[in-house]
Image 1 (cartoon, one colour):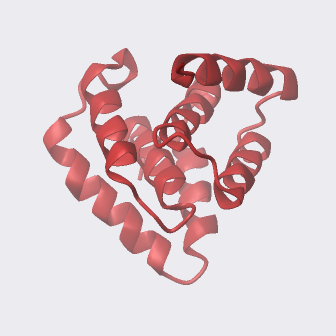
Image 2 (cartoon, helix red, strand yellow; image 1 turned 180 degrees about the vertical axis):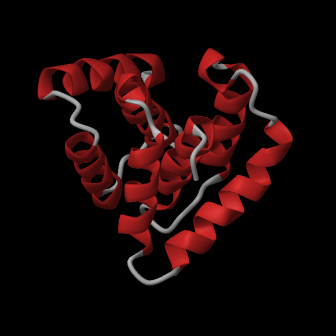
Length: 134
């Protein structure tokens, strides 16, 4: 994988699959993100199922988790590391609950992508604010 948009899709699929339960709300969130965020300009949303399946296949292989993170990190320019972390958070927040597996994934992503702790906290707070309801 060399395309940064595909890498972002892999990060979101990884976030959805982290707890072994890819919910409809998580998948819908991924689809909406791909269609509307400027970072996906030039990405064909029709490629999403193909890319998601390729990611799932890679995850199913030996050391799949590490391989997905490694490939995605290599394909992402440094200026998109915080974006990747934010997109993973959006997917985790989509179903209203963050499992221990998802929280662990976010921690691994933060370290792998060198997202500073204060920056990560700000991104996390913004996500929490967007998903809070009465």
